[in-house]
Image (cartoon, rainbow, N blue to C red; front, side, top):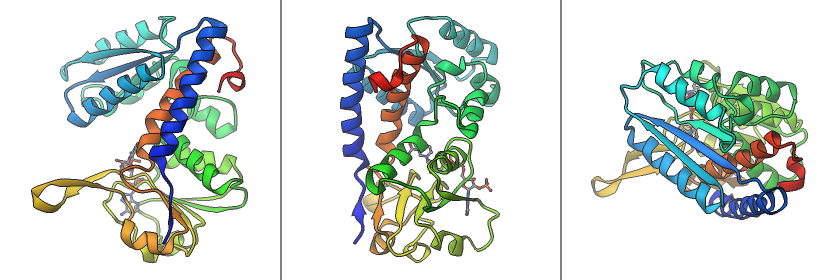
Length: 294
Ligand code: NDP
């Protein structure tokens, strides 16, 4: 039976450390980090995420700013808010909750954020920094995955890592982060041939597909470390819904050496890493070494 990687507990400890970093920033440097989250529209999942982000930001001792726009908002209206936040010294991190309504060009909005305040790490400048090994803000979910992997495995050098999914939010930055740790990285996607066989070669298997329980135990090498990024809501018992990952936990945990559960694995790491990125951005903007604080 696989070791269960407890992302919930790891994220709770990380948030305690971040609160200490925030206290140090305030006491030693007189700076209080601030995170602004912008939500457009009424998407229920996005509303929950934004509420949790605000709550955890305040719990960490930071300032939380929330902006809500109706789903009829125009791109110009949103860009105006982004511009105000770029120029507001109390705001160190800006996050525009995705997805955005169809009339708004997501890429244009993301690239309008000051890259040094881009705590999601999605701005082209930060993508370039990540892929060239320059310091910069890194996407939260893959950053959280790498933290869990390093905590459990230690040095990742030479590990054969297979990532299922090539999105800009998870798959591609995950690959860059593992490459930077000297893994041998394979990125797979919906057109990959013999996907099961490719996955079976993995010492580290990261599933970021968005297909409930697609990866089963017979796709996994004995003893592999499995990181399940997927969050899928499916029909459960008694007419209720339940959350499952992209990996079938029951069969995968018979074969894997270690595995993240859903819920309680990668999910809680995402917001914790967002708070961490906000502290890092605050340091960057105030000429403070992040290494001194984090
Ligand atoms: P996307 O839909 O943007 O990307 C999915 C990727 O999976 C694509 O690259 C796609 O390939 C690939 N794919 C789809 N079907 C298959 C298949 N049958 N075989 C192989 N590859 C396939 O999703 P995201 O990256 O945004 O998210 C992935 C999952 O992670 C979702 O469940 C999402 O909810 C979850 N998630 C969780 C977060 C967290 O905080 N834990 C944060 C972000 C996402 P192709 O490019 O060829 O279409």
